[in-house]
Length: 171
Image (tube, rainbow, N blue to C red; front, side, top):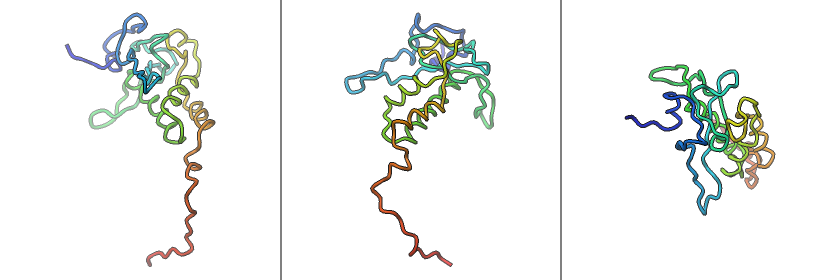
């Protein structure tokens, strides 16, 4: 029997409620004495209509939010193809968190994870299907990160301004 990560295995089975059956990595609890927050962000897939995809697992406690995962243009072999799965939805969330962390210095991983969960767009179709009841909202996440952080451009404050008056360019 082949082994699949839980993000990839959803395309081979019907939906499952992860509140009833622990599926990994969604069920991992990575809290430690040095990391007192859950560092796993579990993502469900939605289709173009905002409906939970028929192949996506769900959970009111173990799946944090949803993101687009159906018919996503992706690299495949020697070119591009449209693919579907939570493996297509998860990179949207990962990229949004990376954008927050990279663009706004001082934002911690814990803050970024809390922000991605708290800035979702609520959707009735996801109520009871994800812990947040919503889908990823990158704009709201970035606004939230910017509100409490120092923008990258302003974070470099102890540098001497560069003067280009003595710069000689080769001829």
